[in-house]
Length: 146
Image (tube, rainbow, N blue to C red; front, side, top):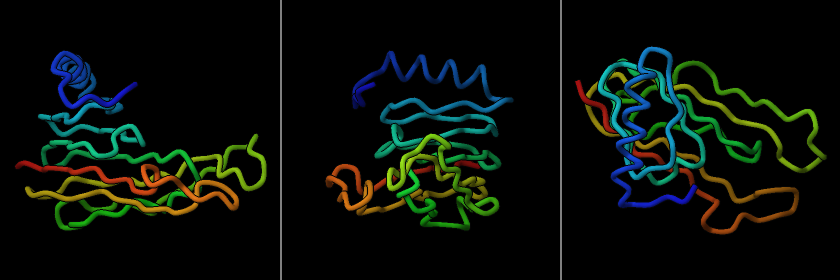
């Protein structure tokens, strides 16, 4: 899916899907922004990079990055969006050595109103393979409301 900054229909569809999944959690699709209006669980991955997520306090956010070459994402404002437990790494059983196959997962809780960035930076995308500039940084802005 291509990230489009002006995709009102896609955003509306994502928000409708999000409303229907508020009690069980949902996966955030690639849009320029999304809003969670009730405490819910949201799952983000690389497709959410450079987007803004608006959530209410009490919401949980799971970040799944699909390469073990990513470090665990961190919050720029832990008082606003705090890590919830230790990050986990799950290698893929069918991965060739040096491939980085697997996921790095970190859980966060939106605690108080404010803004935080969930970020991770890497330089290596494989064994002896430097990442291109557009694959080095993961950054999602999280705006928490009361």
